[in-house]
Length: 250
Ligand code: FBP
Image (tube, rainbow, N blue to C red; front, side, top):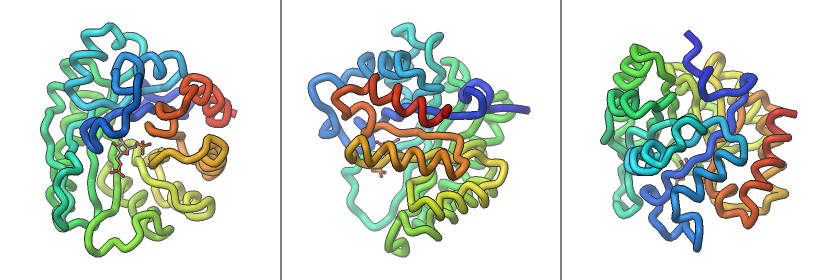
């Protein structure tokens, strides 16, 4: 079954991520981008194939605010704040696949901190989520971020390639990974096999730099991008999105 059909266009993905208010706190926001409706409008006008949200925003804005028919939803089922500063990285499930299905999500998302002390708990939660999602006919997207005391550099080529391969092995339909370099990203896409790869953006860089990264990722054979700050922290988020769209569907 093609679980990804609702969130891809011609096999490509352009996903707007907006869970930072929870993951990083409102410190990421300025005058307008704290407002979920402002972001959902960028997603609709910018031609995104999906938006990735935590359940509160999904229910109160995406669903109740009338965005549901305009832009597909990837509902995040786990997440954590950055207030905990301990050595372990764990992000537990707080929302169900049933809820995702009930509000009309096209896919569920889950973050795994590969290499952390708690990786097996997250791998196991993701496994159950993937089975439930596929039973209900929706896709399971894995954010795979290697992290923890044994990960010296979370964007080292071999680490990014490992994250991509892990995505395939645990059955993710899409794996969202950070950028390494052009050659390594090609290898990451290769070893991810039939699991589609999308770029996770990172903190804001210049738009010229970001476009180069996106071009490299597309050239590497990735499905596309699932990014946040480099779009909605841009002064012209819709204009930036339209430029990226051209690169992704070139
Ligand atoms: P960005 O493109 O802004 O990096 O967003 C992608 C994302 O995965 C978000 O979904 C998430 O909130 C954030 O990155 C987490 O980043 P980190 O764990 O590196 O702080």
